[in-house]
Figure 1 (cartoon, rainbow, N blue to C red):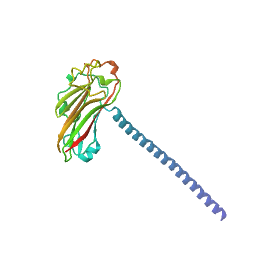
Figure 2: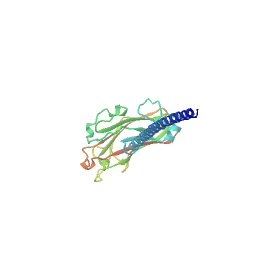
Figure 3: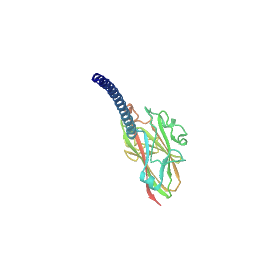
Figure 4: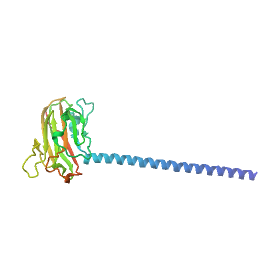
Length: 243
């Protein structure tokens, strides 16, 4: 009888060991899977952060409005005149390895296409600033150079269409003698491309903006030293008066 009890105990012990071994193996597999999932999640977060950082630091063109103005006064941005949601930030698509061209070679319909509509060697972006509130306001806009390398801004041109009216901006000539012959106006300063002000911007009113950026090949400063340069422009709008 005692031998039967010992045999039964041994069988139970063996089964327990086998079950314990299977559970341990299953635990190892689960931990490995969880570890891989954690690594994958970290990688996704890192990539998203890198993309966000790249856009913020080196992205071609970003438009922003003051969030307080959006929330309180209803000022908003949109890539189309018919907007179904409020936006405080818009990003134009980047053009990689942009080469120099002549402004005379740009298409004639740049102000007729909404959103990003880049060419091989230029950036083109159309957006709308909309007064979605109940008050008549005045606002100011400022386009600034947020990041530049290799002095590429020396030969950059920026065309800004405001409700169809076009102005081409460029840096003052290197010798300080004024604006380039192909430009309508000089940059406001070393870091500011242009400023504008709009008064009596009534409720439901929409201002259409198109921004075109290219490297002007006819600029004397457009030399091989600019190769590899990067430029990020930002345009900020803010309400300065409410009536």
